[in-house]
Length: 122
Figure (cartoon, helix red, strand yellow):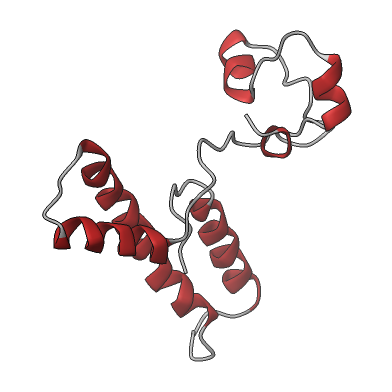
């Protein structure tokens, strides 16, 4: 894991001999040691490539007529990011009809859903 992704500083990382991620701590029924009063962060499995780079890579693979398990695995990840992007942009539109606390709640929900994406939307 990347330290910042799981709430562990460089000094804490250097000092530890063992580490339990937030998911493992939850499975064991113990509090996550590095939460520092906050809910434990969701571990991130990738560096979240931008959607445009994934789309370009898939286009190149199609042009070369290359199909690998990796390219096929990337397609649904790109589709999920694209599916998130359209309604998120609508929320930011000046013509969006939600206002005040409804709009804020919708934006928070969109941000929470974005955290689960493996490809960064544009």
